[in-house]
Length: 303
View 1 (cartoon, rainbow, N blue to C red):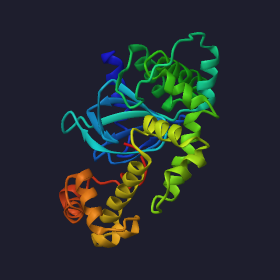
View 2: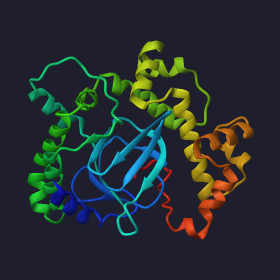
View 3: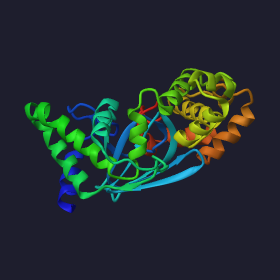
View 4: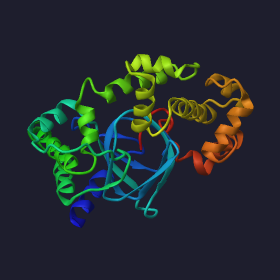
């Protein structure tokens, strides 16, 4: 597996400091040099080099090289990325999950068993077979004619390998168009569109077409946070982006993202980022730090 990992790393070193298109449908790559504070989009992630620590809700998840995890819905997260050295940056691959592809594999799967409830954010060690499949996929970057034929087959193989592991049930939920994941996604879409507005959880439950108790339970299971916590993370991520790229005073930004109290905003900001808003903005605008900032970091993109 070491040879395959090393070859994959060499290929992904061509990526930018953002999710970079590979020319292969749904496949992206990243060479990250900045923080991991953003809204993570639905995707299968494979870490190739370095490490990542993410705070999702109130829980910390650690990802090392040759581990993968699944993001089932848009999730705001904060964290840190660690390189293995000056010339060994954090490298990762991403596969946007197509429910139709997953559904065909589920239809062919005769393994019926009791549902297991493993957090999709849990780090899972990638088996050799998955690494080999990813390598064959990435070799297609420079072979567009071959990619048109082979990439869909390799994509199925990668998803098949995930389905052999502990995140199988999450893939089942992603493939179900009328399942709980789809219902929660409707509520998340509303929250993202109206994150500055106050809301009642009962109204979100209605949007999701669930009872209040079922909605609250499934929302927490899928996102690792409550609806109120989710909204707060959205506000704070947006506030940080505004502080860095559209500088203003903290009170003005607090009200812009929906806070009614500037002091509460500052307390929440310190609790999440460990530093007051003004000091944080100054730190990111310093020459030593600004060169590593990508404008997409806190706009709702992954790294």
